[in-house]
Amino acid sequence: MVNVLNLFTPFTPQTAKINARISKPECVIGEYFQLELDILSGNIEQHISSIKTQVDCYLEDVNATTKTEKTTITSYQLEKNIVLSPNTKISQSYDLYLPLDSPITMPGCRFEVSTSICHANEAVYQDRISIYAQPNKLLAAWFSCLAKLNLKQSNYWIADRHNRTHFNFAYQQKYRYINMGSSELPNKFFIIFSYESYPDYLDINIDLQKSNYRSSQESFRITITNQNNHDLREILIKQIKEFTN
Image (cartoon, rainbow, N blue to C red; front, side, top):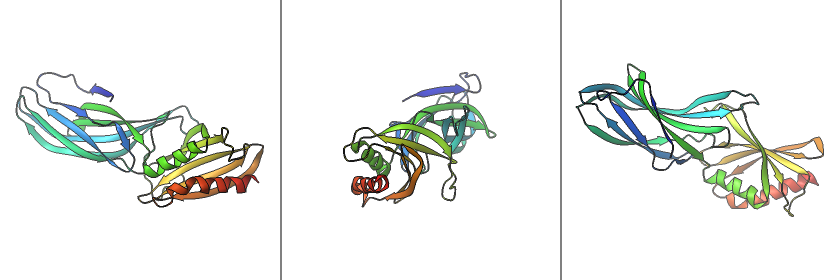
């Protein structure tokens, strides 16, 4: 676990501080993870207006640009109007939810949980922890299917999300995979996909393209559920063969 401390004001024995911990930094999208917090007073009585935390995502090379985009995935007010006696420690734990529309940790996509002591809505002390957003069960089944078919990632990028009806996160991760030697599949094609996660299912939006014909493309969607995730291999093979024949 990476824990980076950032002080907005110089620490003195009189000031309060926080120590934040996450026992398991690998957090699954669509699930809760636990933040553990020690609130430490200085050697005088202190009043804290609030303690807030947020999950921030840092994205590099969005839409093929060189700038880094910071976007807040979710935020919470953990505590409000705390009075701390001198030289005391309060330990608390909080369940935080990583939304389903969160991206997953990849090159150029990283996450931090920032927890702040605030006075009059201004952060005066902050503790930051890196977390690693992992695929949920259905998305993991999709990536496992690609691996079993010997399809390998050849490119990856971050683009604007055009369908914002059900999603707060403004971007989507897109992947390009190619056949690395599967005898079950043709050689001259590649697959580009993005995904949309919902509580009970996962939509994979797929573009199939033939390697030697730029204009030859087929777009379709595979919906993955707990009932059909074991049939992904057969579903994908059928679609690819129909397209490439």
